[in-house]
Length: 142
Image (cartoon, rainbow, N blue to C red; front, side, top):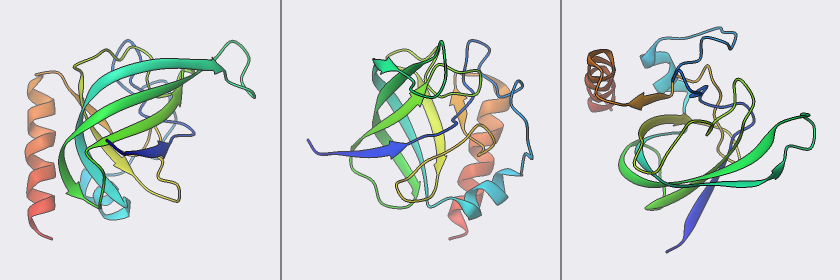
């Protein structure tokens, strides 16, 4: 199966706590994040791989996170994507495990995202269900 690569300079901020609280804003609304993203999708983590040290960040490791794309809200993607992240405070991938479900807002060339892009985990919390319902309402207006 062919994979698309999404390059993430600073990413989801899904560390152990699962939020971007250690990262600085500006934070936008879900509708603003959707409008500015080139691709928005729901995916399930298939594998997290350490690929080596992060060249410009001491004590950090580069990661590749392979996701099965479960649903595309916006854009065109393959059925599998590989997202590059790192283990920094605002990095993407640290604390993720096989089976974790995520919503990702990506933009740019190559596609990327950041901790302030509106990305969120789907771990069964009521606030996540509300955000997913809001996302579906925004996406249905296209």
